[in-house]
Image 1: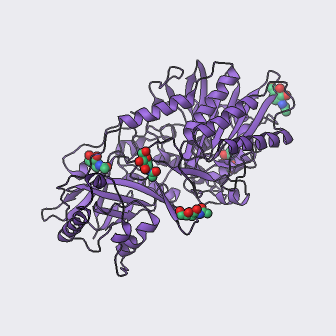
Image 2: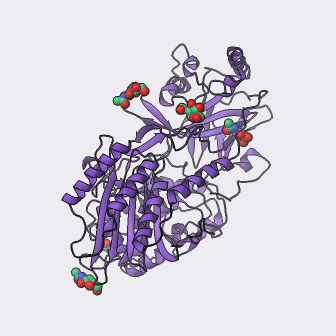
Length: 627
Ligand SMILES: *[C@@H]1O[C@H](CO)[C@@H](O)[C@H](O)[C@H]1NC(C)=O
Ligand SMILES: *[C@@H]1O[C@H](CO)[C@@H](O)[C@H](O)[C@H]1NC(C)=O
Ligand SMILES: *[C@@H]1O[C@H](CO)[C@@H](O)[C@H](O)[C@H]1NC(C)=O
Ligand SMILES: *[C@@H]1O[C@H](CO)[C@@H](O)[C@H](O)[C@H]1NC(C)=O
Ligand SMILES: *[C@@H]1O[C@H](CO)[C@@H](O)[C@H](O)[C@H]1NC(C)=O
């Protein structure tokens, strides 16, 4: 591995020497120099990453010229194509700045009547806009939505991959809030879907956010490789593979692991889709270098000096509105405030403005220091430790440029990750005398999250009696095995498959589960499974704990293209998120529905779960039993 990386590094250096990307105008010292290359390759190695990194560095010179450097490191694709300045990455939530900027450009557009302002209420623009909280429904402004202070938690599991901007808006009134309006910062992608609706609603030509941003930002700034179209990116042949690993969460989490890839997470053309405003932009180091220059110039095209984005728009979205990090995590950092798709904080006494991005297979960070007049973008195609890598690389470039004693951020971040795992509550095994309620299989419905068909895995028609038999069978099967063996989970899905073909929807799910979710169903635990067509998931698993309480895991089943092992599972029991499902029953013992708890609504650390006397009141999301 080491040798491969060293070889890759030589090839990268050779490529960048053939294609010098540094502006000839400057005699300034190169920041992405051989030492930095060694550091980045060491970082890829230290995090055992199968992927690579693209870095763009820009700096305004005293004479108004620019030092522009871009470089690729490591692997772009499974076929060993290397990352270079043209390699395309999903920049993920770094797309939010384009959405907030578009809102600002519409606010500045004097030909729109009635005019928009930062205090325009979304309910006055978006037909039928409402949330579950009547005060928030009436009051949420553009500023509230872009600064994540609406009181509505993420609810990222509420949307499916076939969602539209309009259908996402219709779900909003059914998503439980976790705070009052303007009381705390809670990151919310759906509010950027709402903001992305503005161009369509206020302009006569009804452009999508993707069309609006292309016409008014990408094209005038010459960001010609930047696109919302996954199809265009794929057909260019330059889109990086989104690498991932199957980490052994019960062993060395930084150790070697099977390498996987994520197929690109969305399928869109130039019109984008509902995700465009929250995370739909695809770009490369070359264009991000230009974008950083434009941001440092507060909206001007660095080549022509033409104003593309009004300066006051970028000042507004880059200024603190809500507090995203009230106390700093490290002495070199300060508290962080959030504007619109921009965070603002300090590093070693200097102010920076940045945003991160994360979608399956990709992690990005785009940072600028407005006073020191430089900025950098770090784009990584590693789903597992890509965020940790971009932080370590980002701060090293900053330390190096500012001439500061470098800090070993990889080391710090690793220690922190391990400490956090230590602090996690230990999971309790299912009690030996656990009792399973009857008749839970069937359809459940939530207006915000859609419908689910929960199916028992392993048994064709599980009633209370039937299940008891299954448990007895399993106990009998296992009785010969040692106690230690019992503690370990050895899935035996094959035994669980029904003998005769069962053509019901649950029968089909039972038959396909071992293939699409290899190793996931523990046949010693009664388990309900449902297909769940979400952007971030494909299945939801409820493993029985006790009574009406289940342990919930959200699973992504990813095709491999390898017929002898056609799927792998991202997000498994090994790294549980502590979510629970709690069923409620009527007097006759029939299921009324179930609530999901434990943070699945994405309110963030420190925000309490709902309290109440019933499972429904305690639920972050409540699914009602269907007919
Ligand atoms: C843009 O403006 C800067 C600063 O005023 C100036 O130095 C530079 O020459 C201008 N460039 C062009 C192309 O006009
Ligand atoms: C401003 O609004 C007009 C129509 O009212 C539209 O044609 C134009 O493209 C808009 N420009 C921007 C930057 O929003
Ligand atoms: C994970 O690590 C543990 C502890 O080192 C080891 O016992 C186990 O076999 C590993 N699992 C896999 C799938 O490699
Ligand atoms: C299952 O949920 C219960 C109740 O929240 C919890 O105590 C237990 O640790 C969980 N167990 C597993 C294996 O997730
Ligand atoms: C396909 O999967 C099998 C079984 O895990 C594995 O042995 C083989 O190497 C894989 N083939 C490829 C091309 O990855």
